[in-house]
Amino acid sequence: MRERMQERMPMRALTRMPMRMRMRMRMPVPVPMRVRMPAVTGVLALSGVLLLSGCGIRATTVPVDVGAAPSRVSCDTPAQSASAPVQGFRATVELVCGSQLVGVERVVPVPEKRPVKEPEALVAQALLEALERNPSAEEREAGFTTGVPAGLTSVRARTGDPQGTLRLSRRPEDLPPVALAQIVCTLAGSEAVSAGPGPIILGGPDADPPRKWECTDAMRARPESVPTLGEIARPTPPPSATPTP
Image 1 (cartoon, rainbow, N blue to C red):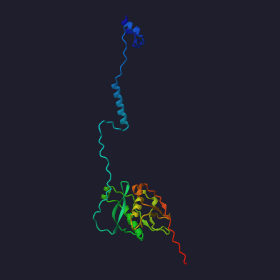
Image 2 (cartoon, one colour; image 1 turned 180 degrees about the vertical axis):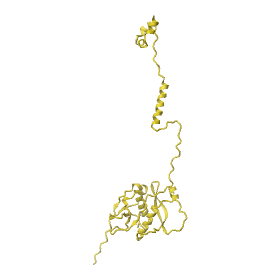
Image 3 (cartoon, rainbow, N blue to C red; image 1 turned 90 degrees about the vertical axis):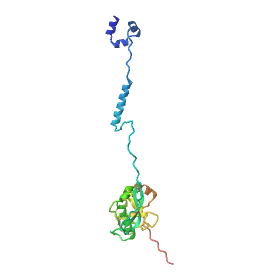
Image 4 (tube, rainbow, N blue to C red; image 1 turned 30 degrees about the horizontal axis):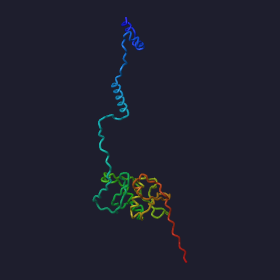
């Protein structure tokens, strides 16, 4: 009769029955079900892999070879190759290499078209053309570039400009900062244009007053940060006449 009662009673009723009554009826004590942890661990690991794959991250335990680190440019100025004699002068042209200005020695030819007659303006025109010219294959391989736009020329100075003013066909403040830094430091290094240490005075083709910039170590190190709006250059007042006794 006890066996028939055990068969008719469901498992839920057995678990709720007091322990003494189960002992009297000699019923087995229900054992709680065990959870297989390895299966759960495997599901979690699989879900983690799926999440990584969805984020675009490649999950792997093997080191991945991503190649060698990018090599830096050398910025070594190549030697001047022997070529046909050119009518010109030696000058240091400031090019861009490794995000900074690096001087390159060149033989700068005299411009064929001479829009101005002043010697300083002619030298400035030749240096502008040298800056506009694309670097040679050897210079490009070493990492040299230029940011000076093509078509930039030197124009005649205006009456009342400070001494040493060089006016360009475009306003200096409209040029890219890197191009302006190249022009300022190249002109500052030319003895025919710059009378010595000091600022370079540049102006545009309009009647706006010229402004001055100075080639500093900071400009050479970070030409992209050069302020394109320089300080206004005031004209030098004429010397006052001394009274005659």
